[in-house]
Amino acid sequence: MAGGNIRGIQELRKRMQTQKPMDITFVVDASSSIWPDNFTMGLWFVEDFVDIFQVQPDMVRVAAVSYGDRVYTEDAFGFDEYTNNVDLKKAITDIPYRELVRLLETGAGIRHMRETFLLMLAKM
Image 1 (cartoon, rainbow, N blue to C red):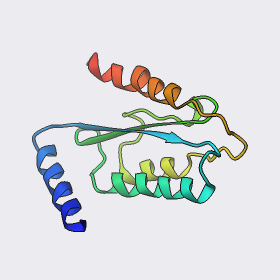
Image 2 (tube, one colour):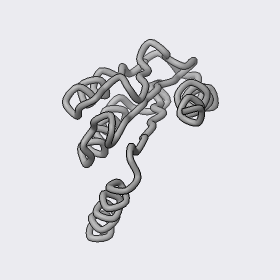
Image 3 (cartoon, rainbow, N blue to C red):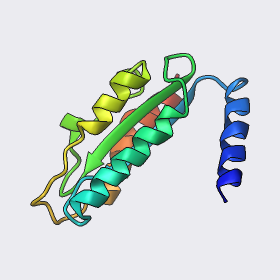
Image 4 (cartoon, rainbow, N blue to C red):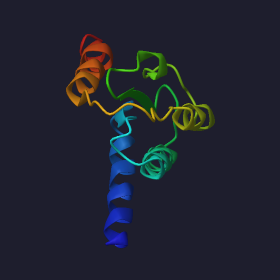
């Protein structure tokens, strides 16, 4: 299984050479519907995933939004906000866990990502 993942990553890197820039989005559940340790592991996954790529405006751009009982626009960032891996990974680490939030607005998080960041790309 690990070999398949490596081949998949290598294939993705090859495609990136002809399709620039690549835009990656993350919609993160920051509510207490998941355990704090699992939230942290989720952020580690996002950090490790973006670390595969060279984040810069003409190569790979990343946007993220978190949600719980509402969309946390104060924690969201768009494709042009972070232009290198170090700053991007710091921003991901800084996405806060909302310990007392039990309601989920998953649809609102996805809608915010689509309407705020993805539709902007379609107009370019």
